[in-house]
Length: 320
Ligand SMILES: Nc1ncnc2c1ncn2[C@@H]1O[C@H](COP(=O)(O)OP(=O)(O)OP(=O)(O)O)[C@@H](O)[C@H]1O
Ligand SMILES: [Mg+2]
Image (cartoon, rainbow, N blue to C red; front, side, top):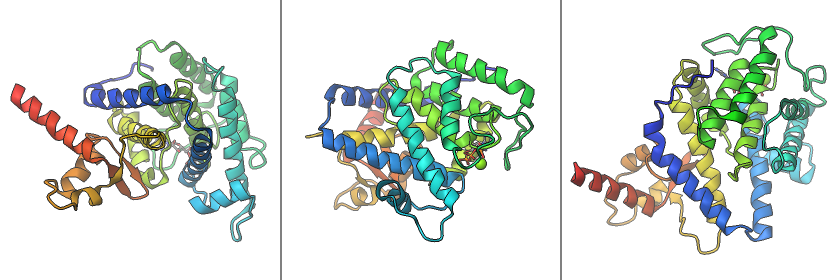
């Protein structure tokens, strides 16, 4: 079951290198100014909660989520359940931060604890409990395994990420974990939210900031999972790399004297004398060929990222 087809690898080599480079820059520059760090952490916590719950159907907006979490406000017209989901998710994030240093090995109990926090006060009967019956995922191209196999599969998956027999890098490992986990679908509900938390335990313990799958990308995310079910990890890997790069960039931009001047693509290409078209640069961004990330519906990149890409391509041409 855990024989992973790594044919995506060649295409992602330079992206992986860039992510590791950025993480190293971040690590070297720590400690960041405390206030700045705290601010980023809080705003990522809100974003992460908003996006993960929104993927699952929660209708609180980003701003409403911020009000619920940071100001303790109750939003008119939104259900009690939706409020609980936001608060629960924040508690689960705090739990992750509390165990991230000493949880070198992922344990089943950590995953059950995360799940239990996610469904606390909402689905008490299922919180922290592995399913004992069949489930279906609507829109999926497969049926998750029989309930009596779940526990063994889960142990196998945990063993896989702890022993890492294929020597995958941390991003690959988190991506495979993400997919295999929802393939197993260990719980009746809350699998998505739980895995989007647990995969970040894998990344955060290695010094990466949390990777946040955006609600705007929900359709792409589900398609990517369907492809992964067929053994093709290309799309999911791209989504994960983009999610990781976005939060890395957020941290890097907060460093004093950083040269990560991210701007909307339209701003860069609309400068007088810009030799690039918006379509071309957007395509490079979406394909993960340049250092870029998405905020809302817009892509952000740096002039340097575009220049580096062009120069690199020129060099390759000259060689061949
Ligand atoms: N085609 C698919 N193959 C495998 N997993 C899938 C597929 N489509 C969706 N999933 C996963 O299943 C999750 C939904 O499972 P479940 O409803 O138990 O979780 P949830 O937390 O309640 O909701 P959500 O995951 O939407 O936040 C999705 O988030 C996604 O991670
Ligand atoms: Mg659900």
